[in-house]
Image 1 (cartoon, rainbow, N blue to C red):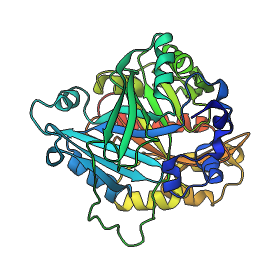
Image 2: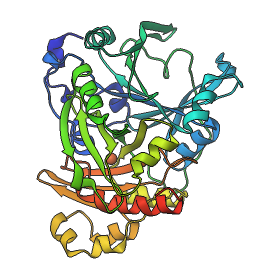
Image 3: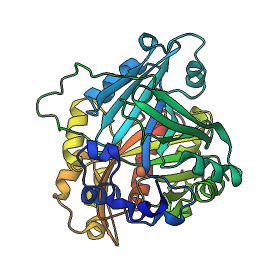
Length: 407
Ligand SMILES: [Fe+2]
């Protein structure tokens, strides 16, 4: 793609977004998509490509993401397709794609990864128009190139890809699939499942991925902010320090970086010194190092999404009733699209800033370890991350931490 065609890319939808029937206006609302001029971008990123998970049981996890989160199976690779040591299920909701992988052969490296980290995100892969240009820039500023640019080809065409190291064992695979028409990548076959959604289930529980939060060690947050700004040309979006996110026990520091069009947003947390062990410390211990803490799934209708997920057995962090009865909250949030009682009944949090408001809620950890979890987010103009809710949220997380004996 030439640079001149990159200008004001927010009106140009990705193939995944077109497939999901999303409009540019919807994406502005859903994930805060903005116009930007890619001509001067040293590392142009179009958007997310996929979130790759390593889990203990990919077959069952893939079923859970279909039944509870309404995702659709669209591709598969495993022993039947020539991938001897592991299985991979490609799932989609709207423009968001998950690849859920697990080891099959006892000597699969995925099993070593899982033994150390448990269920988690291993690769946040990004769609880029020019893999070689991105890698050349990344190398010139000292990034670690784990896999050099190369082509993957089959009868559906060619994908150009390369992989950069990020925090901990997390990586970013860069993908240019503009010359490829297959179901996912060479080596995968198209596959749908016989899963039938429950009657009354939303068509899609969520439409897009909004942000992925990384937890890094004490003192490392600025290093990773620098990685994203210098290597990937991302810009700083917001900053929360100290008292913004401090409770009696827990404190953390957080900064947010985003790509030019704001499709890709990475808040980065590090623990801050507090009276007792913070949730970030607990994550770092049980994930055995830095990793992806939560993924925010953007939805048009968080109320319907939460009702559906609860009916499917997904558990959310509880919000204390005092959060909703606090007169300061009502004053802070002003008018939102539903009565506060509707939010209270579901434990949905609300935050407002100068641009608008957002509704959000957080699940409990997805797997056995107190590590990765989901957020659901419904944006109404606000481009924030729920700063006003952090204290209420962390107090809820700490109640769970205390029950696990980790506070
Ligand atoms: Fe978040």
